[in-house]
Length: 89
Image (cartoon, rainbow, N blue to C red; front, side):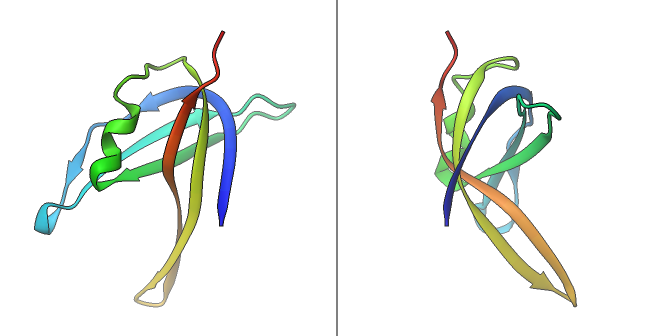
């Protein structure tokens, strides 16, 4: 399921490294609508570099997939970004 969301970058976090050289990087955008929402996305493996050319405050469009999993009886959802486009003026 591929989705898109537009917004302004609020924060870009550092790359995290886990076992077996798995890397993840998270960033947050604020949507621009009547009731703005702060939405956290994650980039994994080689995609962690996609956000390198952007800064906080940049207007972007994020293409992402919704991922879900179950761990020890709890359910988790993540928004996994796979493409970022600049939409700023």
